[in-house]
Amino acid sequence: MYLHALYKTSPDLQAAHAASPFIVTMDDHEVENDWANGISQPDEEESNQNFLAVRARL
Image (cartoon, rainbow, N blue to C red; front, side, top):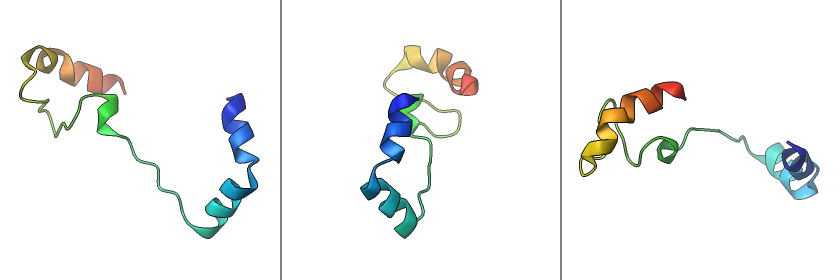
């Protein structure tokens, strides 16, 4: 939290926020690389077993 607050004091970052909207989105790598709907990466059968449970916790 401290670093986030510190970053927000940066004049350059404040100018960037004032000049352009920032859109925050989830990166699919937080759960599984390149997943879509209920399908995990096809080459990782073990991860498919837990994929939906892990995704639901986010």
